[in-house]
Length: 157
Image 1 (cartoon, one colour):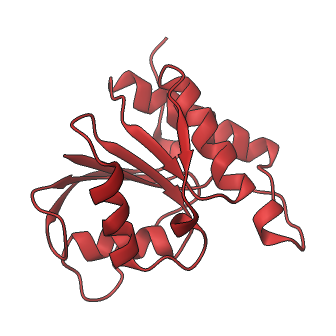
Image 2: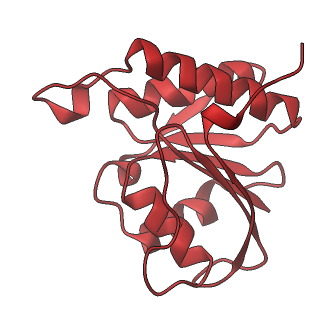
């Protein structure tokens, strides 16, 4: 199974962290990444943190992927442990793959855990996506296929 781990796009600042929305640049980042992922022809299940910026990112990407539904799971909120991320994969993963949208450092920690790194080794910029092929679920069960940020993503017209 292919797991796509994504950090939310750029957000406005604010006191209520969970309520921070995407900035204009963040909407552009999420839309660009969604278009690039759509060009790959993927249609994974999409699960997001309940935080506004993550849900907005996931929704823009899901729209680009053909209007996929976005599920929300509180375990993706800030502070997720890698083991909780692995449980999400077990619960929501399918033959079409899974896209998880969350926060740093959690998404990088999950990727690092699945790649077998004892220390964090995957830096996740805003709206970046890491694609991991899971051979088995758990520590070291995955192989990194690619890792890209929206600044590198262009789609031929």
